[in-house]
Image (tube, rainbow over all chains, first blue to last red; front, side, top):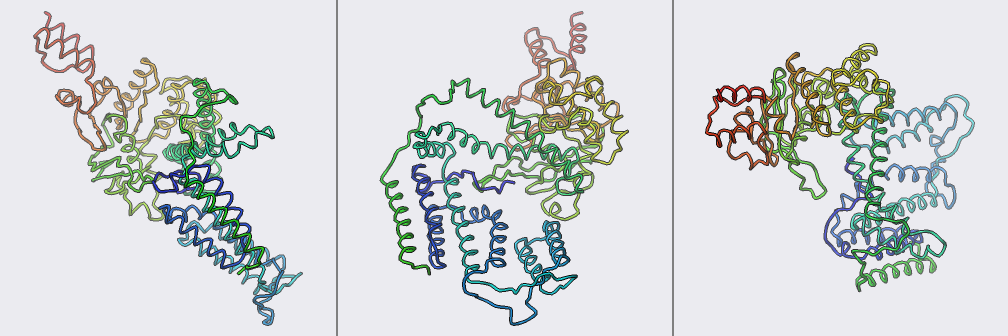
Length: 330
Length: 287
């Protein structure tokens, strides 16, 4: 539970910490757009390398960032597999159709068998040490099942072909997601929630002209970010309290599981509501009036380093666009 | 020995990789029968962490805790099929804030939740709930109410009843009397004392109230900066000179005794256990 990295600030001191939050937010947006414009294997790896360099220079623990990426792994593998199986555009990269044994057989019983395998994976994955490997093995196993089994009426057959576009698109989606999540993790790891709030508020200021109250939005976001660790700690305490009443969170039947989750969620809700009520009272006691103009204790200061950062990010965007326009999609 | 701590260290893992040392080198044994222990110490000294080790909610970073014959350390905890749940039935722990455990629609269901988790059937669980709600000083009309519409003190009592209904061998209470009025506090402490005396069960109470310590405890554990600095009877503790160094104060009755001895030059034969005893002693001296 404590491994959740997204949205957590970790104290440190490097140039990333000293940077103005506005710069970081704007640079993040620019770099995210660049990541989407970028094409080509080589380019992607260069971009990833640059991000690794940024992590090194910013003295951020890379293992920590990777750990934060872990929950994404499932999504990444899933999209990649689906791209490979169903994207049938572009030149054929690998053909298995010459050999008859590589033909996929779609029949209801076959599909049922695959669903069974997936369910088996879902319930047994907890007991396996190398979960990622297990997931890959399951996916490969399912495809193998479709190839080898011919149960019942086969209503459709398809050859297992891998197209170039499928590999490319799958790979690009994966890389882009990794790049984006890493970049946003850098932002939240190195920026205090209060600073992030200030930065967001001033970046979103133009929205005022279309009658969106940015100050309130920034406040909502700041409070939400602030309470993530608090609520996690509370959840942990509730788990301990219920564990001492005999709730076993690691074991138990499906029916018990529901009750366990209820015993966790109800106090969680009650405590959250109570907390928000108390917070509202505390804010009111300090004369907080929504929408009123306020002064700040900490003013954001724009420095040369910030200008340079923005220029570098813009240069990155410009070069990426140039690459795309010129057509160097290596 | 029901619970035995053997050179226990515990570190809360932080993000700076250093962690916060909450327990260092704790060695203590607790019997399953006949003990009334109070655990005192300033806030942040590791009291709650210590009691959370007693029913295996936390695992020592180094060293081991043996609870009813089950050895809990880093190695054993990783084993599959290592079941901690039975321990938690034997060692009942009531948390400081009742909000963390109340969740059912009615008080009755909430009290029945614990026993039912340990395979007690519906009827017996109900019986126990009805019995325990009276034990903690509420009446049966509370059983149908929602636990969220109770006052702080009532919630506290319901949460205690929820643990009592599991019929643990050792009962641990984390500041059970905070947020209670003086009358309710005394009543509840008497309940614990009754359980202790009638059923001969071990009770461990975390408290900040020295009067409670003096009046009820047979044994006192004092925590300070993650170390266990005192383990013994309350009389010896409060006759120590350097007790203020541990951020503890002296019970009112001892304070009064000291003043009487100093200002009137009287020497009392022994330390009185409670106000009545002090009164008879003063009467004897006055004669």
